[in-house]
Length: 401
Image (cartoon, rainbow, N blue to C red; front, side, top):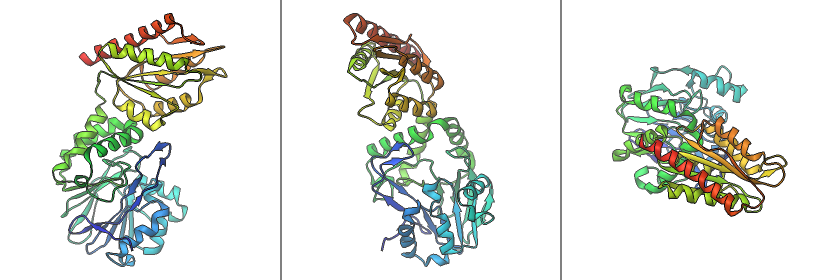
């Protein structure tokens, strides 16, 4: 039997560990994930969130190691996305709780996901609370962090903030608390999670962080729905990380992304990168043939310049370039400069198309796009160097402001 893990006097972790997860709606998850669910043992026994549908049995085993699941009185759904609500209908059918709660928009989302749940979920809003016995659950809506329905729940007494996807990461861990795990690995996975999931909602993140002290919550544990839980001296760590990620402050670091057919665009990429480095900026070069769109997003979070190169194929972008640019445009990065380049044989539309994507993502173009026919000559590589220098100079000027 899989056992629950006690995280406070009244609360047990009863979630599931997905060691094998490698992809999450387009985001590559190299270290798996956890689906965290929490059992509150009070007069009204309460389950906070459920797990992805295939892991229902694991969650129920963990609950049963503490209490008969049929004794659960209340279920709270902080977030309607399927990795947290997928087993909710089966859990309700098994447990038959006296009440199920979600945010107002959460009720609508869950009823749209699971039509049999219509009329079975009660809405709560910011400021509402439910009494559980010795403790209560208070609710704070966090709309668009990262779905319209998202909310936090706060347990009085044990002082636990159940933060759904906020302050989490895709990281399969057997030790439940952050202070029991490797900090650099957690930092890397937190960056990847933020870059791929929460980056478009950075303005909302900053508003929440600004409002956080005024919520009057004496938090002892931050318990997200993915990855390890935060406590003690590490409580401020995820808040500081999120502030850094959300602000996207200008740094003298550039990212050069490229794909290549016969290595001509690759030669251009290296010339561009060398010239950026010679200005004194840092630079990372990623070939899209050997990295994922998630790698590109994580690298973009740490850069303030995005320079993209692609060959032209069938009058269009190289397929991997189009894929990654579509993905990055949707993440809506801030405070970035950039440029486009590429080799072509017949027509050369790729550079203009890259520029369209970059402008659509809010990237300021600081050099004219550069396209070279077939294999770049020494003179063409000098043009690449000029493009790289223009990007580096613009980045240094921005960083000095």
